[in-house]
Amino acid sequence: MTANDRPQPASADVVKIASPMIEAIEHAWAAIRANHPDLPAVVVIMGGGIVPGGIKLGHWAADTWAHREHNTENALDAGADAAQRYSELFVGAEGLARQPHEVLATLLHEAAHGLAHAREIQDTSRQGRWHNARFAALAAEVGITVTKDPKIGYSITSIPDETTAKYMGTIMELSLAITHVRALPAMVKITAPADPVPVGGGVAVAPAPVRRRPGATCGCGREVHIARAALAEAPIICGKCLEPFTY
Image 1 (spheres, rainbow, N blue to C red):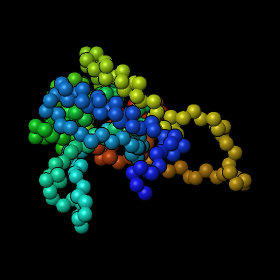
Image 2 (cartoon, one colour):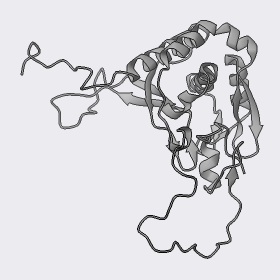
Image 3 (spheres, rainbow, N blue to C red):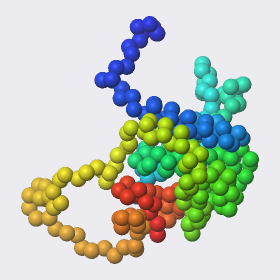
Image 4 (cartoon, one colour):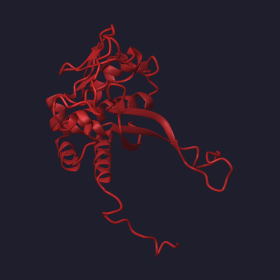
């Protein structure tokens, strides 16, 4: 098959909803770089952010993308192109259910990590879970407010009014571009009966009660049992109230 007779994807083949959203995120990153020129360029990816008990809103992964060599036994053979590495900006697609200025706050949070990488500043520890005071200073530089959590440090992020006003054009573009969200069952209206009849007939026997340690809770009172180390790695957001789970 040649390029001329290659079939073009139709709407029945591909649902093109992700590309405009990724493009808007790329434009947002360009707007942030315009204010912080030493911020590195990134490869933007978007996908499911579900982790045990909640949602990962985003992450920064330094120098993770490399040129792929062709016609070699090793696709990562060193060469002039392979020497260039690019960092990754991941955006959790479930988090797109938030307001666009909150999505921007996530991008600014990751931008603070990007500045730390560019300036060779150690802004985290404990395998990147603990956000230290140096990260808090970088967060303030990019225009977000971070508060300290006893388990993950200065990671809980909010965006002040002045930063919202500064990036209003970017926020409007995000608002127009984010037309879909990767939905969790908890984010979908439940139409099934509250107490459905047990499937398969017979009598449903409740198991004996099990004593459990209290789990992490969110703003709407849901409880999940997850290792504290996993919860400390990054904020885990409830798919129903979009508030972080905390112990």
